[in-house]
Amino acid sequence: MTSELSSEERELLAAEYALGLLTGADLTQARQMETTDSEFVRLVTDWEIRLAALTNDLTNETPSPSVKKALLAEVFPQRMRQPFFKRLWAWQAGVAFGLLMLAAVIAFDFRTPDQTTGPLYAAEITADAGDFRVVAVVDKSTDEMFLTRTLGSAPEGRILQVWAHGEGEPTISVGLWPEGDTIRLPMPEAIAAVEGILTIGVSEEPPGGSTTGLPSGRIFGTVNIPDVFGQL
Image (cartoon, rainbow, N blue to C red; front, side, top):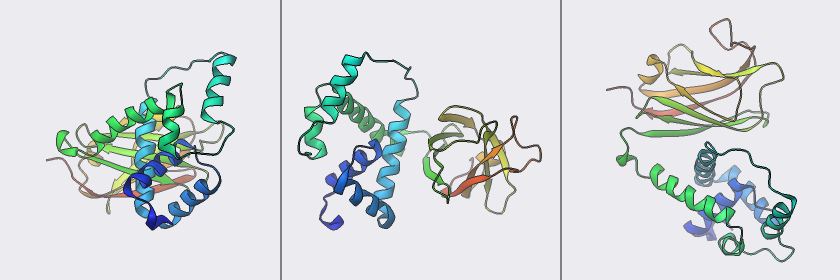
């Protein structure tokens, strides 16, 4: 039962779910919690943001077949599943452990906004069809927007474009997202100055972006970030 999970167990379950490690009853439980437990959804989103940030500076490397085989044997042993925190110590390759330790450092940064020069706001943009998802982070210390695509993409021959507006204000293009899973965009002055509710959306557009000044293709989804502080 969800109510029987301690805060530590909920955090670990969210981390394992974000990493895509759950199977069987554990996966079923996490999916049920995702539809009924808003706090669990927030934990999963937090982990997705932290883990996505860890890949920004990584380069592609192709492991040898023997290394890949050994790693898969450690990650997916043919034995009864153990709790996530116990399996971490069994992974001799140390990949998952190192990843989560680094994520914990990032988590500390996310949970101590008083140590930054401006607040961070995080939200998730999801398509109603369930075929597209983006994690968005607004950094008011730099007036930048960080977006990580975790599901879906633009149709072939099209690109993504990011839009935003304040409550009751016109929609403005934040920038184009032609390739890659993660992008950092400086916010236009009008968007950086928004106070209250900031709405962010993503659409698919022709190469070069919309020619109308507004979304002209499919809008994958939008999200409202409340209580955003404008420039002082």
